[in-house]
Structures are given as C-alpha cells and as structure tokens.
Picture 1 (cartoon, rainbow, N blue to C red):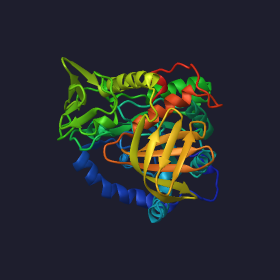
Picture 2: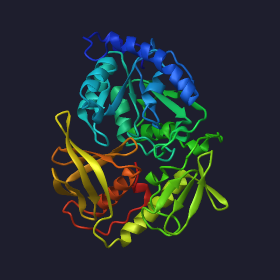
Picture 3: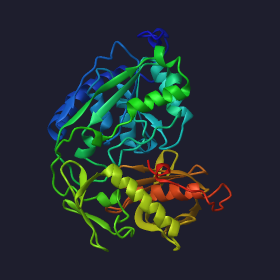
Picture 4: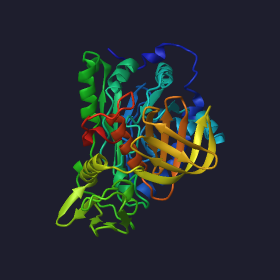
Length: 415
C-alpha cells in the first residue's frame, strides 16, 4: 500500500527538486493571481498537497498558460513536462530551468530521458505535472490518450490527481484571434491511488484513466463568453467549406464564417456554437465534418500541391534554432518541400517521423535523421491542415513509399 512520504524516506541527493523552486512557486502565485482573476475571471479550488505528495498530476490542455493556472491550486511546486521547443530560447530557457525546472519532451514522440527525469523528481519528493494530450485542444474536447500513459502511471507508482480546467477553450480558443470574457475554473476532479490501480491490468488502468480524463466543454451547462470578432481565425480549424467542399475558401469575419466561393455563412455565437441555418452545431461536430470533407477532397485530389504557405523556417540543432529565412513551404501527395535562397529540399513521408503543432501558427517537423524543422506560418494560416494531410498520407503510404488501398476515417486524424 502506498503511504504518504514513501519516496521521501529514500534519502538521496536532490538533483532536481530544489528549495528555490518552492520559493519561486510561492512568489509566482502572488504575481500571477491578480492576472488570473481579472483577465480570466478564474475561480481556483486549492488543495494542500505539500505534506501528502509526491503526486502525478494529469490535466486537460486548453491554453498555453495552463501550468500557471494549475499551479495556483497547489502549495508545492509542480514540475511540468514541456515541449523541447522552450529549451532552445537562450537566456529564457536558462531562467525557466533555474526557476521551475521543467521536464523536456519532444512533441508527439516518446522520450526515455523524459521518463527518467520524472522518476528522479518523484523519488526526491517532487510533484510531476503532465498535459498528456501534448497539444492545446482545437475543439474543446480532449484528444485521445496514448495507452502508454497506463505504463507510465504504474512505473511512477504514486497517486494520480486528475485536474480539470473549464471555460478556457471558450474564453481563448486555440484558433481564435481575440479574447472572449466569461468564467473559468480549475480544480481537482478525482485522485487515483496505487493501492487500487496496482491490482489492475494496463488495459484496465488505461480505461479508468480515459474515463476520468476525457472532457468535452460542450457537455457543460452553457456559459456566455462575449467578445468582439469571435469568428476571426476559425479558418485555422475549418478549412473545407461544408457546402461547396472547396478548400481554403472559408474566412472568419466578425461573428461569422463565410465561404467566398459559394456564399455559405454560419454565425459563431456567445456559447461557442455555430448557428448553421436553423440548426446549432458544436465545433467538435464541425471539426468531424471538416475531416470527413478533407478525406473526400484528398481521395479525389489529382493536382501536385495540396496546400502551400510562406513560412519563417528554423532548423533545431543541439538546442539552438538556426534561421533559414522566409521560405515557401508546401505539402503534396509525395511529401513536404521547402524552397528559398538558403534552403531548397523535399522530404518524403517515409523520411518524416511525425509533425506537431505549437501555439496558434507554428508547425514542428521531426525527421527520421534527427533533424527538426520549426515553422512559423504567416497570418491566419492553419498548421492543423498540414497535420491532417500528413496523417492521411502517412497512413495511405507503406514503409516502401508505395500507395496502398488502406481506408481511413476521421478517428485516425487529429491531435
């Protein structure tokens, strides 16, 4: 049976958990609380875990500042797993490591070094925080969890806190340009203890985690989130017209999204729904329809370039980003290409391990040779469309680079 302080009994030199982290945690709460209260109308439910830990904290991911909001609930530091992209920011990276000691992880990829550091922190009595989706939600619904989360929970073998934030997606959606104003809340939902889950199989534990973790903001009672130009940026999420099925013809303007090809129009209301004629649909439903239309679009596609953009491109090497300038970036049925004065190259889908999205307009491409490309897209361009197209062709092409007859559905696309 797990007992409070089990890991603290294992005396060892503190390599990860430092006294300064506790000091800066308390100080940052004092500084951040007025911002959270005034800007986000945040209601925090506090918990005393200082003498009860260590814990593993699993939380849904709606906005970039989630770790700061989650930290307001606890009186001890939480060491969060973070994208490796924040570890190549020079002085800023050094400051973050000194103050908060975040745990580096490559987006969408497993990392043995990440797991080892989590284990060290737990053994030193520290609390580890994970946003297991690995990405901000685009629709207000949590992304599917990897089954490996069950193995990690058993490996760390400490109580698991399921922490939930509400209202942040409707207040500041990932695709949006402007803020909306309404209530946000954060607090512990449930706690799962080792004495319970150690008797379960990995599959049973995974199902229990999925049940506690899965969240859809549209299942909550309606809350009003008012703001200006609420529909601007919706084309980052919805880029195939649901009426004429053409690509990249939708534009968010004011409170509406319109197709400049066929004239289709829908109103985005204060409750986060699209009013499409006489019916009202959530963005979860709209995203599903968009993916269905994208699959049909790609299935019939006979051209060369599917989507293209101008992007500021960087290559990440040894903790540093080397700028490559403003390049033309495109995706085709064969792979992805860059064209510019400093760089001109093409990578097949077999040469690309995975891609991930960061923030509202950034794309990260991980190559099988170890290189990482970091792209900042122009304006309201959608990095999401590149992720979905990549997933489509990655599934449709085998390891030899040959196209297959594999069928794909919307559940195989997305974050």
